[in-house]
Image (cartoon, rainbow, N blue to C red; front, side, top):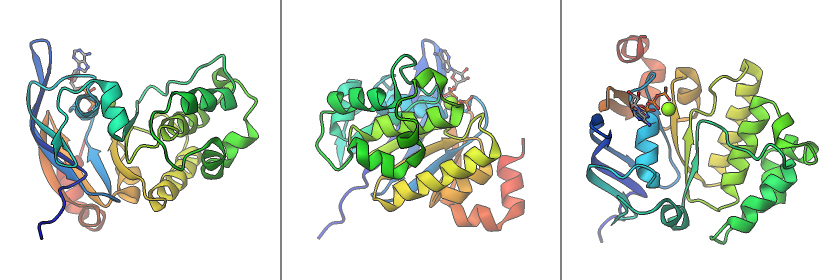
Length: 238
Ligand SMILES: Nc1ncnc2c1ncn2[C@@H]1O[C@H](COP(=O)(O)OP(=O)(O)OP(=O)(O)O)[C@@H](O)[C@H]1O
Ligand SMILES: [Mg+2]
């Protein structure tokens, strides 16, 4: 019997904005149930990798295998329907709609069946239940981040691409978010996380890929980086 393919396998991915090349042959895998982190500083290509997977930026080379099928170049709605959800770094919520309305819109747009209902996301993010009648535009950054994740969950993704969820949030809020994302992982959602925050990534991730200027500089278990200060300094010193 052959082993099933990884949930997501990126092979030799190249991407560019016009003539400006950004990714130079990225390869990585995400197995079902894992939390994998793409770690790297500003501008190394974390968002570009996620946009390529989502079909928002068609790659200029390489393969993006979703359960063994090459989805490189698929339209974003088709990628979403196949089971990949994207939480972009800019925390897009409808400012004029309440929290509940934001979730309701996402639920109506969902094209996949699954367990995520408004009540289920309230269980995960109890603060959203408390704030259900507040307009999106009046939420704090952390609350908007939670609402953005919750909206994406309404589409019942098998894999969640989370782009810099901790960026710009106060330490206490980051702590709460860590707790929420861990709970999400325990519920069986596979996660690919892009982060600059080393502590945040290492607290959540099973495995880490360190990205540098559009290339993978290091790949390994998160525990290795957690336990080896010297390796961490060498790979991630800013
Ligand atoms: N729309 C765009 N047009 C042209 N160049 C872009 C565009 N978006 C990103 N880039 C460039 O591509 C490179 C990679 O950017 P990307 O946003 O993928 O990095 P990142 O790792 O997500 O960084 P950050 O941590 O700042 O979010 C950068 O040099 C950036 O300037
Ligand atoms: Mg980015």
